[in-house]
Length: 598
Image 1 (cartoon, one colour):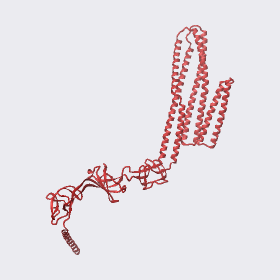
Image 2 (cartoon, one colour):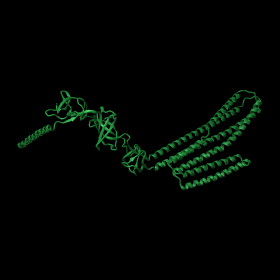
Image 3 (tube, helix red, strand yellow):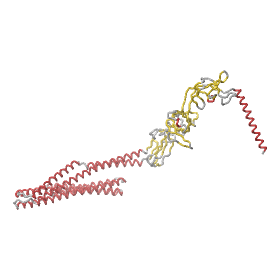
Image 4 (spheres, one colour):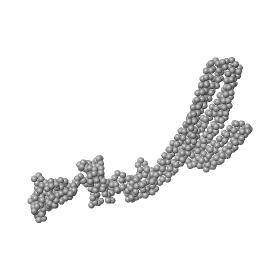
């Protein structure tokens, strides 16, 4: 133990002795070499804030390109490092399904336009005509009601018109007979037309039912052959009924057959036409490929055909009204004949018969029926007009669907949104991508001409940083290259790391030189103040003596202290405002026999 202590003591003594010898040698060397001096020169002084940051792309200079639709990557035209131009095709997805959708949307549009044209043709009747018919029927109703009131007033009175009653009864009888003939004529004219409409509507229902059944189960070869045979049979039946109708018309003109035979032949011809049209539609439907949209359309057409059948059947009411008119007219004739007989039998003045009141009421009923019929026609015209508007809306909807399908087809061609360099590729040919709420990234494109420096400044210095201040920075990849820039933005939101608060300061780069890349570390200096061409001396030359700042100027081999006024100071030099001149030699080191506290 004692030996160890002696060895440690000897080592300490040797170290102290060596230090003394080295200090004496150093002072002797300094004495031999002389004091360290410098010359007063003019230079540029600047003061800045040091900050560490990184090179980053500007907003919009880094774009992640993705797909807006799902599909398989058919071709990929870009790789990492490739230079691409804005609008250049960089990838293409499989577009077979989307092309089929576009074709289907085009077909739907064509069908909707055809349906719209048919609805426009059906709604060709002007609303003004039906409105005029309603007004005329309303006016006629007012006239016969006024007549009824007059007849009722006459029935309550006691007029003495025996002879005139006979004449009036005769005229009433003649008018009743004329109305009866007119009612017979209207009944004959209305009944064939109503049967034809019902037959056509029923044929349309059968056709649409057949279309729906064919769409639901799909067409077979034997069904198509059967449908073609049905068309030929319907054509043959139409030719036969047409010949029969022409033959009946010829015989009717010669009074060989009655008008009912012509009406029956006409009905048979109309039914044959409806059957032929239904057979042709069924054949066309069987030849058409079935699609889900076809099923929906077939159901809609069946509903429409059923609605038209219901309308046609409702028109049969017109026939019934005509028959009622015939019955009413016959009753009126009978009443008129009875009135005539009573008038002739009773030549005395008698009150107006009750039959006349009933006849007037019958006229009122007929006028009311005519008004109801006119209003029904007006409603029918309005329904057709609304159907045309609905068909037009379907056309616009089909056009929108076509535009949407074309837009989705265009999304299979992926183009570069900006010009730049491909930074990464996240997919390859043959892969299938699924576009959801966010588009999957295919390629990342960087615009290396739009990069900037993000420097993080301490909270103690951020108050001195302003937009427009100049800055310099270095990157580790090129330590000998100095880059310049300018402060363009200061983020208001601070960032805290390890309890240190810093603010992001954006520096726009003056010249890229093709060297900088994103995420390079940057050592930046933000210039606070700079002065050019000022007198400056090294900081070590400034001393304090007697409460004043002085420098020691060499004069005749001696160093004389001289008071100076100082200005801006950086890490190495201090600006001298007064006290020295350019070219003066000043003391920087220490004179022998002086201390640092001078």
